[in-house]
Image (cartoon, rainbow, N blue to C red; front, side, top):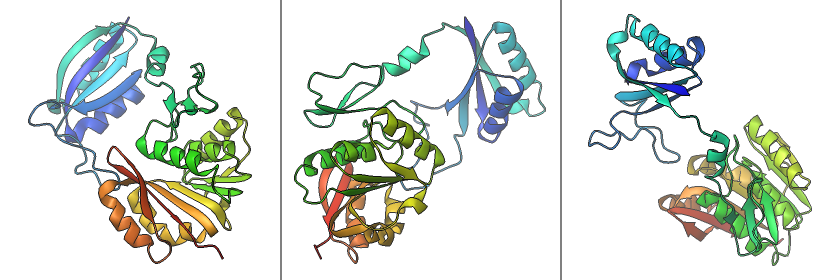
Length: 301
């Protein structure tokens, strides 16, 4: 049996209280949510992709901390309420929490994802669907890209549909690789040389691990690894960095090669097309749930 301490905290004390709970009071976990969620006073804290957050935090936050026993929970509450700034804290409750199999609960939220009729993304704890003639084994992790997000699915669909008919599929660059899912898909669909780069070292590690788990060979590293031109350049990131990267990404596309961009909202497509126009003509080739995929082919030499 574990116990949960629930506090209502003012915006300027959330970080201080959270740090104390995590570091000094040894809470097993600490979470923060809008205390006004579901009411007319609910505040949207996070902005749209590529846009800054509208504010640093909620005016009133609910802080939840999990402890191993009731004594630790009570001691933590007593310590916090004894701080000089305790006027900004309000004890909501101390409640017993039934233990659960959190691993099994988390796993149940991730099911196999069909990219096409015979191409699937399958977590390692699931059996492969009968229809899966080609699949990627991939579990949720620190890096973005499990196949559940529309932008990832659109890129995977593009790979699955174009690989069999593309005259050039020798070299593929995945710029902003995340989990490596697109790079792995390219390798599984016949790409001879696959290069995957990301600014996040954790993403590079995840890509290498996932590539080994799926039996494919690729090169993964920081963006400096991206050199020369490629038959296909994939970039599933966000609209703002895509705009800044236009000359660089287009410079990596070989004559006759494809550039595929995702991570942008439908309303951002026209602006991206205009930004890339001096380098490469792009069109909207796919849309899903308010997101768009752009692609264009450089004329052959």
